[in-house]
Each structure stands twice: as structure tokens, then as C-alpha cells.
Image 1 (cartoon, helix red, strand yellow):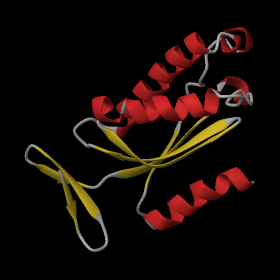
Image 2 (cartoon, one colour; image 1 turned 45 degrees about the vertical axis):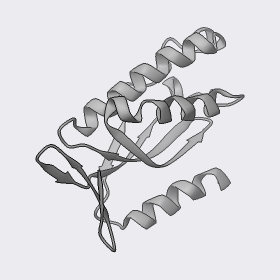
Image 3 (cartoon, rainbow, N blue to C red; image 1 turned 60 degrees about the vertical axis):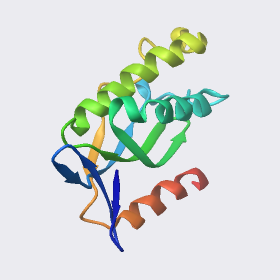
Length: 137
């Protein structure tokens, strides 16, 4: 369930009302530009499909050839690190099955690294605009 305040949307879970947004960035191994030719579109589809199961909501996302930007709202009972790890693990497995050429290009799809920043020091709108503008760069 969602509770909408004039300036912010809150989610609810058993005994919990929350609003926890994170800006997440992760990259393919060796930062190779492999998120192209349909891989980018399928990656987006997979991440949308897993929202309910992994307990996150995509507020904004952009897939660049060599990195991914996500703005996620994540249930704090689950935790951001765990959610991002699940997203990376599942998408790697799925994409490497559906696009076999990825297997020959990279030993694993994603690096172990990830950037995670809570949204709070800047406004949510600023982060959304930043992600939306990435494709034009």
C-alpha cells in the first residue's frame, strides 16, 4: 500500500511505513560496452519483472552501453545491498543465457562493485533528472 503526502510517497509493510530511495550504479566486467543490441531493453524488462519478488520499486532507470543507473525505493526490511546483489545475479544469469555472445566476451557479466547512495543530500527530482539526462551524453 502507498501513502501519498503532498511532497513524498510512503510505502507500507507489516508494522512499517517507509520511504527509502537509493541511486545505484553498476557496470559490466571491464566496463565493456555490451549493454546494446537488445541487451539493454531485455535488462530493463527483467528488472521490472523482479520488483515484486525482490521487494523494490524502480522509480527511474537508464541503461548505458557500459553502465546502469537505477533509482530504487527499497523496503528496509530487505536491504539495499541484498536487493542490488539479487538484481545483478539474476540479470547476469538470464542475459548470458539469452545472449550467448556475452559469455564469450566476458567471464561474468557484472563487476563485483556497485555504487549505492541514499537519496537525501540532493532532492529526488535532482537524481531523477540526472538519470534521465544520461542517455543524451
